Length: 351
Image 1 (tube, one colour):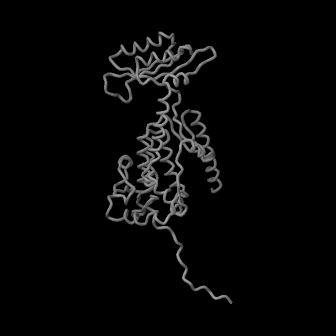
Image 2: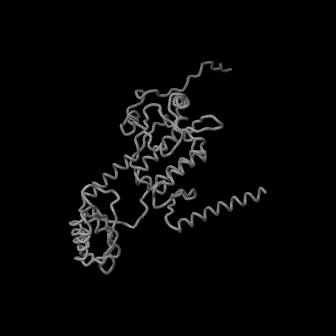
Image 3: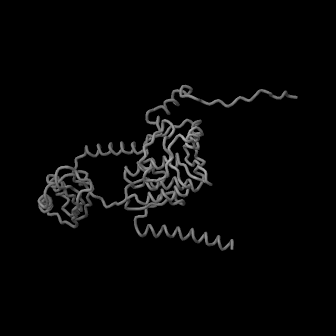
């Protein structure tokens, strides 16, 4: 009969310091790019945009505008231009229009307005011109307009900025390869996303960022930090943590519920501009009356973000639907009607 093993089981070993990792693992988490959770994809996207702008600047300015014009079979080109004029009105505008007249351009649409971002240097006027001109004269026309105007650029008809609408399109905008150690990855609080309400709350922030300005995205990422990562709420009269960062850190969880940090009522406008860091415990947390209260306030905040369109997630195609036309909204309403039919049928079955 085999002798039972009475040896006390040893706890499974794990690495406690960077020095215990091999060279590749240590490099993966100590590279400056990954050393801080504060590192934002917004900064990476901004660097990519600056790189693209630098490459575009190396191209002859007129070439891009000529390439963007629509040329028909008769040799006519339809060109949409935006440019800025300086000086007292109407002299600068008159000189610009004479440039179009000199090249026999037929103007279809003309608008003027004060610039959205005025700069020093006297009165300014931003102009939009859509015209039809012989394609052979396009380079000369653009060159002539540049002599009397500044910031001459093409104006497309698209109101919706490009953003990934499917998971497969993330490869077109995400140039980082995130590095994880398998053991460290076990601590991530992914199971929280199995809760439908929490997952939808997290997704609402992501949807609100699509098409928003960089400034608004920075604010939304800060809101994500103080809610999804480090949010507090009341439940049955007690303060509870719902932030994933708190629930995955026993030390910070105790810290957040102690008397040491400052706990403020959750106000999205205030939380969106609250500075934070990730090197130690947070000095400030935001407390909601309930998780539903945090969700409602966040949705109200997101509804005030200026965008020429709205978006929704389609769970059947796993894609983002852009609601920028009556047809798109009608199609989305059909999905809602289908859901209502299913619920009505369920109620009738219960009754």
